[in-house]
Length: 101
Image (cartoon, rainbow, N blue to C red):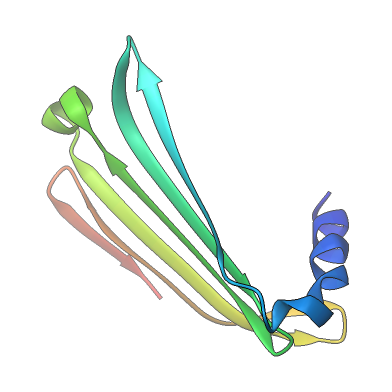
């Protein structure tokens, strides 16, 4: 599946220089209430890629288990392979700061 996604993404590379980043926002609901919001943004260019995600609790869920997390990976293309150059993730869950680089 990952190879298929990569191949499909690479097929669009000639058009990527003029393309805008793709952004998707999702809400997770439980018992009719929003409990989590997720965002993802993907940017592809002929030189490389950037993928960013964020998640945060919402509503009543945030009262009992507050948190938010953001992650980003940047990389370049090596032929048809994606080569990560930098990764960072940071956030706060239940009052504890978490960071990965």
